[in-house]
Length: 165
Image (cartoon, rainbow, N blue to C red; front, side):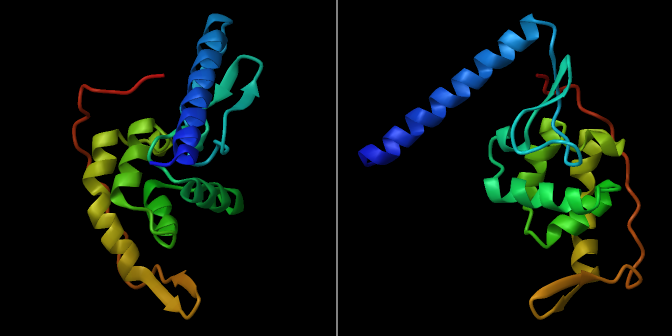
């Protein structure tokens, strides 16, 4: 590993440490940290009220900065209406199952009203659905929602583990 890459890693570690100290200071001052959201979060932390800060999508370890920008761009054009809508629209950006799992575990998909195990359990069926309705028109992808029926969400029991901030 060269000196430049070591230096970058050290700078990133120091930035993360400073952010964590800021988070602790905010909590001590009565400011709560709101879980990330694929519809409402920005790239970084954002004040959403005098006593609430929204967790930025870029702070979810393992999600590339490009994928974060893709999520923000999609939701700014039209908010994601459901878990299925999220997977279908993000399929054109090649959202992987591992990235989706990180988003689920962070709470970024909690707003869709299903527990996290249910979201993980239904991913492969919904990803197949997204693949079946995708039409490749040269450089542009579109979706034909009349090709097959929308899959139903099969609910499963939530595990006892839950991440907290």
